[in-house]
Length: 274
Image (cartoon, rainbow, N blue to C red; front, side, top):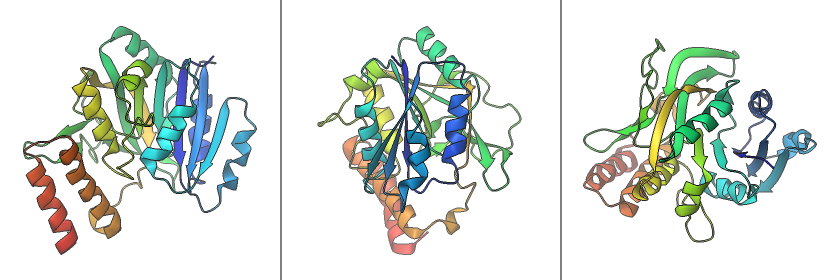
C-alpha cells in the first residue's frame, strides 16, 4: 500500500500535466499513488490517458475551486498513506525529492509540513528560468504574505533547512497524522471558503496552532511554472480582487492586527484596481 499519496488539482492543465506525471514516475520508489482531481476543465478528456495507469486515480468535478478539489483528492487517498503531497499540475519534482521528503519527515517528528525550493520554469520554452519561485512563505512586519526569493536570480541563497511561517501550495509535503488533527467539518483539509488563493497559508496557520511546525528544505527542489511570471498589472482584476478578499477572510478566521492591512489592500484593489 502506498506510503505517499500525491493529490493534483487540474483545471485546463493540458499543457503541463504530462510533464508533472512523468516527473513523479521518475521517483525511485514504488509506493506512490496519484490522484488527479479535475476542477471544471472545459474538456477533461486529456486526462483519459492517465486513467489507464494502475497507480493513478482520476476524479472529475465541476469548477469547485482549488481547496474543495484538494479535499476530494485527500479523502480518496489510501488510508495507509503516511504522507500526502499536494502538488500543482505545473510543478515538476526532481528525481530524489519525494524520497528526501520522507527521510526529512522521519528525522523531524514535530514537522507537519515541508515546503520545497521552487524554481522558475517557462513551459513555453521548456527551460528553467534561472530564478527562484519560492523558498517558503513569510509575512512582512505590516502583514503582507510573500514567497521569499520570488523572482531572484538563483545563486544558491536560502541554502539552509529552516522553519517558515507557511508553505507554498504548489508543493506541500504533509504528514497525514498532522492533517487528521486539523480537519474541518466534512473531513476538509483545506478550508472550502477559500476558492482560490491564500488557502495554503490558512492550512499552515491551522497546523501551527496545533503545535506542528512548517519547514523549508532546499533539498526538496521542484520546478514551478506559475505563469512564468506575469506582472501584477497583467493579472486579471478579478483574480487580484479574489486574492485580496481572501486575505481579509484569512484574518477574520485567524484574528490579528494585520486585518487592517488586509482590509486596506482589498479596498485599494476593489476601488482603485491597483
